Length: 384
Image (cartoon, rainbow, N blue to C red; front, side):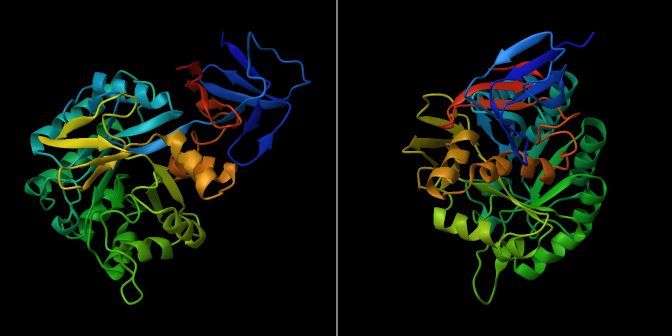
C-alpha cells in the first residue's frame, strides 16, 4: 500500500501559481494533488511546514562538482552521489554531473559512472553533461587547450551509445570542432546539444540551431559577444525564440545589468535558466583544488586559475535565486521558474519534473520567506 504524505501549512508554488491554505499530497514518489487545507485527507503521515514556502525542486544542468568532489578527478557512482548530496543542501533535486574537456580515457570513465549511477538510482542523478572536448581554442576558458579536439566518428558513436544505454545526455560543442551533420545526428538521436565555448558568428550559430542544437552553455561566458554588426552567439541565442540558454547568476560571471538585458530580450518557448557551474568546493571550506592538474584558487566568491581566468563558479542554486530576487528585483515566481521549470523544459523532462502537479515526481524544497533552506525532498523522501 502506498504511503500518503500530507505537507501542510506552507504557501505552495506549483511552478505557475501560488496556493495559500492548501496541502500538498504525496503518494510514494509522486505528487497526488494540491488540495484546500480544509478537505479531509486520507494521509497516513503529516508534515507541518507552517509559515514556509514549498516550491519545485531546483534542476541544475551544469554541475562540475561539490562536497569536495570534482567530477573527472573522481568518476564513480559514489562520486556522483556525494556531489548530488552536497547540492541537495541548497535545494537542488536533479542535476547533470558535468565533465569538462578531458582525455578519451577519463571521458569513458565518466560515462561508465553515469551508467552506474543510473543503475543504482542515485537520488538526484538526472544524466550527464559533457562540456567538451569539442570546443574552440579561442574561447577555451579554463579548459585545457591540449585536450580540445574536433569530434571524430568514435566520439560520435560513444555519445550515441551512452544515450541508448543510459538515458539523458547533454553535450556542449563549438561549431569550430563539430559539423552541422554531427549536430543533426546527435539531436536526431535525442542527445541534447548545447553550443558554447565558441567564437562563432550569429549566422553559424543559427545554422547550428536549425541543425538541432537547442541550448547555449553559460550565456555571455566563453563565447563571441553581441555587437551591432556581428551579433555573435549571444545575439543568436537571444534572437532565436526556440533556444534555451543557461546563465551563471553569481554576479561574477555576468554583470547584473547584462542579466537584466538578456531576461528582457529573451522571448518565446526557449527561456533563460539558471546553472551553477559549481566546482568541488561547494558546501566545503576548501580554499583551492585541482582541475586537469592545475591549481584553482577560491577567494571572494571566485574560482580562478593562477592567471585570474575564471574556472567554474562558487555558488549554489538557492543563492542564485536569491541574487535574482535581491539584485535584479525579479519576481520570486519567475526566479523559481528559472531554477526549476525552465531547466526541466530545456532538458525535455517538463512532463515529470519542474512543477508540483498530479503525477509529477515529488521533488520539492521548503524555504523560509527570506529564502533560507529548510528541507529538500527527492522522490517523495526527505533528503536533507
